Length: 184
Length: 313
Figure 1 (cartoon, chains in turn orange, red):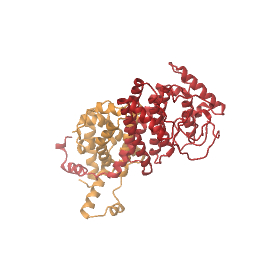
Figure 2 (cartoon, helix red, strand yellow):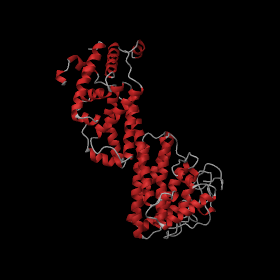
Figure 3 (cartoon, chains in turn orange, cyan):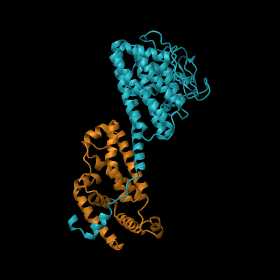
């Protein structure tokens, strides 16, 4: 399920290629919220998520400048850039494997129920980050963003069959991790 | 595994991941502003490069890139500017490298000097007008570059842009009605594009830069209006231009005549280190930007000294 109805992508991209102000503003306004949420789910850090969004759109401008870039399916294209950014980030800085420490718990102290919820969410996020980048992306786009397999396939640049396979293996891996962490 | 076949506990765990802390609105606004600024810089650069390619700008300072269509006038310009450059012990490569410089960079005076040199050596009002427009795009690109790095905009950049816009109007006013109306259409379209860029630049520009940006925006808006006036009422437009020249302390006597702003090189343009480049003819104060033709003046301010001949490209 696409998150927002937008004007025709080819028309928008045509205007974006000449750096039309309104078209570029529309693209940013339409896609940056979803990209931010996506990055937050995979990175768990607001600053990193903002960096990811900023670099995604900067890369988008670079491909426009190089007279490359998509003719259609702009959302999938942008998410692929973001996915590559996140994968590169984890190659440089592998995801943390430890549980939250006491220090982290103290930093999130607040109303007890809210603190517990945030702590559990952070642990779930850490569990998700134990999956491969492709598995993470498929799980997030499918079950958290509500995309169809065809859209996911465009975003990750793989066939639909590969998406289904990644989904199956990703969920199985996630379940194992969550069981090991006593989260399910 | 379909969602309905999923372990309910796993599904619950995924549902817990649905909620994401709301995005910081300030961070979101900064992100958008940064993106729009980057796009504005690219748009200005493309606009300038398109005009440069059309008039063989690249060839002006880099004749190593041969072009199939060669304009004999540009060939002369190339030879003269490079000869002057070499005469003062510089290299064409330096002048070329200067073309991308910003007002806070060492090569900027060379850039300004080269623009003044080109204008001084351009006798055709049409070509002169095209160069003024091209240079005004450069000023906006420079502003975008300064804003991108969080800097304020020097007054001399604003002044030079205003002068370029003014000269474009004066040059158009000096043409016959038919040519003038055609040129004003080009001026108006260019100004509208520049207004778009200025709108983008306003997004999240440093506070120190905003007064300058607002003035530039207002001036370009005025340019659009004046062009529209000229297209509807050529004589009324010429009277307006005349009045504006008087207000600026220019001649303003009589309706501008065709070719009244053409340049005759009366001497070798002198490069300076003042940051504002040389006036044409070699007998103008070298730190005054945008002085073109006898009697016309720009309301230029300059930051430092009167480095006559003190800088070599």
